[in-house]
Length: 166
Image (tube, rainbow, N blue to C red; front, side, top):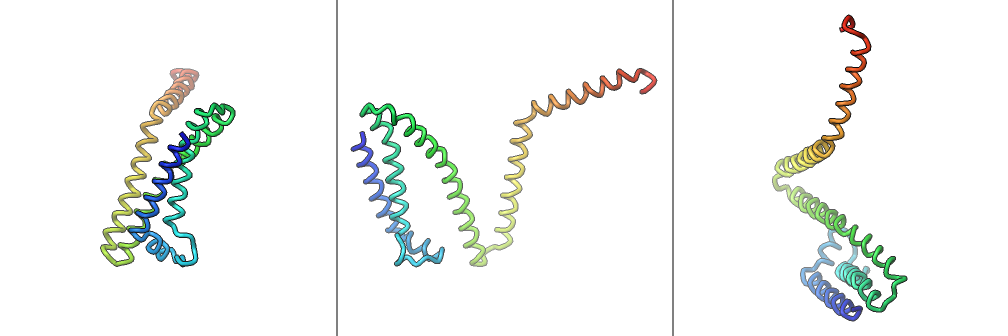
């Protein structure tokens, strides 16, 4: 199982390195960030190495189970679960970064500055409305219980005063 994982990870690392170098990610992103590409480790290699180790880590629990090493299996499975829990956040962060970079490039070129500002405002507004709806709809029962308690407390207070207090 570990051999299959190593082969898959090696192929993925090679494909990523070749693909990222073919689209010249190192020069493009390095130049944008102000990093001297000649003096540093290429971004394509670093990203491909990270994917390589992630794939190996995903195959590790199956290899440990096949070897019968039960003492290490639990902690390794927990580690893999925690790492996989972070992956959606990384994709969301990369998506936000890409949208921000694209918007900044358009604004830097002076293209439709008003449209970009309007789109950004609409995006923030829609996020606020979606959050408010999710919170409101999700806590509808809790709010209903609180209102029932308030009404009951007011009724109890009114009942204690008698008819002349009304």
